[in-house]
Amino acid sequence: MLKHLTVLLVLTGLGAAAVGAQGGGQVAPAPIRPDFSGTWTIVSLTNTPPGEYRTYMWTPPVKMTQDAKTLTLEYVSGGRSHAPVKLVFNLDGSEGKGVDRNGGPYDLLLRAEWRGSRLALNTIYLREKYGNIETTELLALDSPATMTVETTWKLGDLTRTSTSTWRR
Image (cartoon, rainbow, N blue to C red; front, side):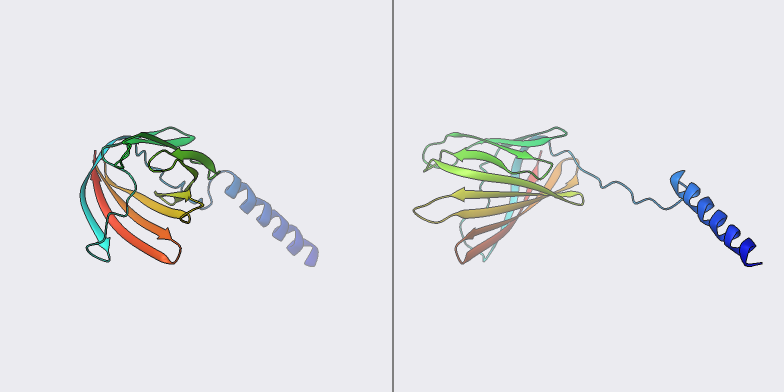
């Protein structure tokens, strides 16, 4: 009797493994990775605390180009130099580098991280004299034409946040 029970358990286990391998088992769906490509213009901004200067670092309009490996942002800086800015974020999470020619030039460390269907863009502005600035923009596609960006801006102990809505 014990021998038959062991054979039955082994066969049942193999049957369950075969069903799982054929897709009959529960499989987690792949995360939705939206395409942020397009030219974006800001339509609203809420800063915390209110009345502070802007916390987003991009100057609209911002052109975003996305492929399977990268998200590229291009815009003209809002600073004195009005220099063209091109930031390339690797969508695999690996670190990239860039240069901010506005008031620097400052070297940049760039990193992207998918958080479900949202994309976090982390930028560190390497400023030896004044201290590094770190920004994180969390992008969420609300509709094909609307994106929400939650921004956190840090300089030393000072942290500012904002939420902005962009339209393409």
